[in-house]
Length: 278
Image (cartoon, rainbow, N blue to C red; front, side):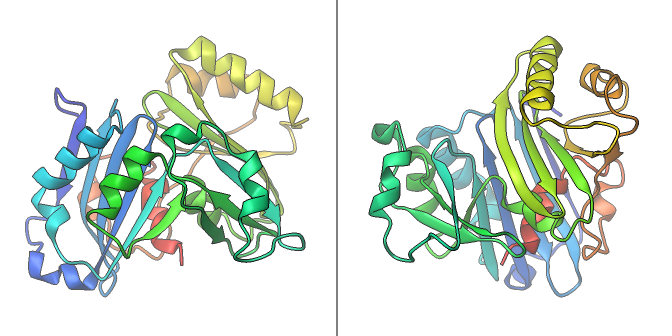
C-alpha cells in the first residue's frame, strides 16, 4: 500500500482496446473501494486496484472514477457490489415480483438512500434479495455505468460458496471491518457487516456471533479472505475457537492470476468472485 492506502496491480502487456473482452468488477464497502479488470476470453486478471480507509462519499467516488483512465474504458460487462444497511431477504415462496411497496417498511434511514429498489436472486438460495443503494453510491455509479449489474455486498461470496456441502462460517475482512456469513449446505443462514476499530472489538463481535448463531466451532468450517493474515491479532483470536482457518483463494475459473503473485492470494477473493455473478 502507498501512503494513500491504495495499490494498483497491472499487467504491463494489457491493451486497453482489449477491454471489450473484459468484465469490470467493482466493489464498494463502507471503508474501501476496489476493482478488477478480468479478460473473459483468456480468464486472466489484467488489473486490480484496491483502496482501504476509503470513505464512499459522492465526491470521493466521482473523483476516483473520473481520475482513473482504466475506468473510462468500454467493457463487455460491468458488475458492481455495494455495501448497504438496507437489505432484506424474502423467501421465494412469499415474494411477489414487481411489487416492492410491502417491503419498504423494512428499510430505514431513507433520507440517505435511493428510492430505487434493486432485486437479486442467487443460484441455490431460497430467497430473493431486495436492497437500496446509498444516494452517494447510486449517483456516482449510474452516471458512469447505467447498464451495470448491481449487487449488494454478499453476492460474490454467495456465488463462490454455492453448493457447499458442510456448515461454513465465512469472514471477509477489510482494514476496518469484516463481513460474516453463515451457510448450511450452501444456504445462507445469516450475514452482516461489522465495523471494528481494533482486535478487542473483533473479539467481542466474534463471541456474540458464536453465541447468537449457536455455532459449534468443532463442526463448522471456517473460511477467511480479504485483508487478513496468519499472525494477525484477528487470526490468533480465531484460532482460540476454531481448529483451523482456510484462507479462501479466487475461483478456479480465473486461470491466470500472475499479477497477484506477489500478494497474498486471498486478499481479492471476494472482489474477483463477482465475476461468478450472473
